[in-house]
Amino acid sequence: MLSQRSTLAIVAMDMKLGYPRVSTTDQDARMQIAALVEAGVGEDKIFIDHMSAAKTAKERPGLTELLKYARDGDQVYCWRIDRLGRSLIDVLNTVDEMTKKGIALYSLFDGVDPSTPPNEAPCCTSKISQRATDGRQLSRT
Image 1 (cartoon, one colour):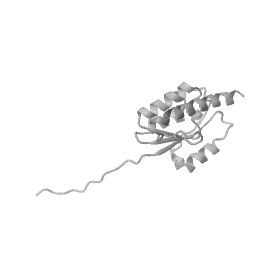
Image 2 (cartoon, one colour):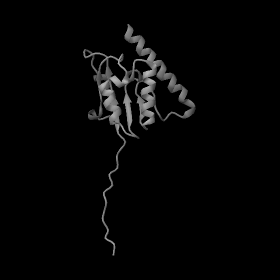
Image 3 (cartoon, rainbow, N blue to C red):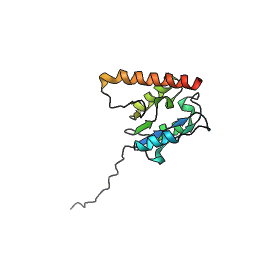
Image 4 (cartoon, helix red, strand yellow):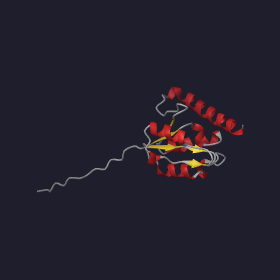
């Protein structure tokens, strides 16, 4: 007779993770953090950077840590898409890295949402491009 053992299955829940960034230590990220928490991101799952976007995504410790921590199925929320990088190519490279890892990206302010139907995807690309451009222009003034 075979013995029956109960097994405990551990199911990993997809996590909501957040990424706020401010350009200097003089700036305050509280507004971004509050928006992320309101979207359902736990405060312990927020990876923050206080540094210029002139640094590439790979040079920012908070974003680097988030990208190492995030797993397939996780959701990353940012307040605005331009928080992910200074240049359009840096933003797109970061988004591409997330996509390849199966991580969904949401931008609260810009309305970037991975559930966008494929025929509306150019609209999301346009939003990403415009937000990155706007962010660069604002930082120069």
